[in-house]
Length: 221
Image 1: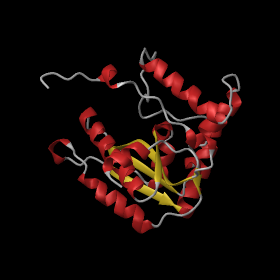
Image 2: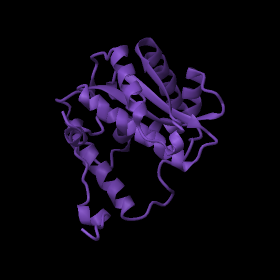
Image 3: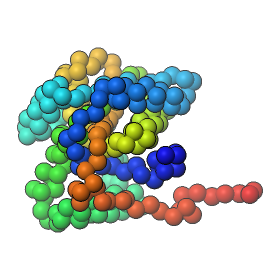
Image 4: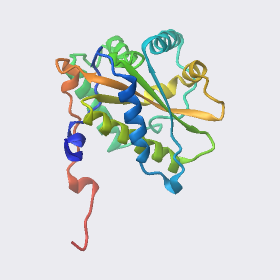
């Protein structure tokens, strides 16, 4: 598989098979991804990988916390009062997603239950968490994002799939306490890792993309 094929195959998978992923494979992916670029070679990413009983324990704690109410988030995943075209893109993405599992907009309860599936890592056998030092800034946030993208593409090469989950930034204390995160580090994102359930309708979603002309210009060619 070449890089272009991996980029094309990568989607946010929201239904996984329970098949385990070996620790050797997870380590190989995370270690290979450290060749991702970072400004000044700061390598700001920190990663925790959970599987088996530790993952089950965290999911139970997070589900209990979710039932009681979310914590103060590390950051706003989306800006307040999101404007177009971003607002429309997010709306269409949500509508397309829920259409795959036949949940209408007015069924708020079903939508919230689907959101809660984030806590279960959508059934994936591996949960990843990405952190960085709180004193670092937006450029280093983008570096962590590039590391995560590299992880996602390397997972595709191994026959695995992923779903990046900024949802976990809403439960930073639960995650931080569980893994013993130092106070000077912040939770940036989670990620589900495992084998895609090809039969799950929700995995049929291919989010829409604007045409090239909507986001790029070329001159002098």
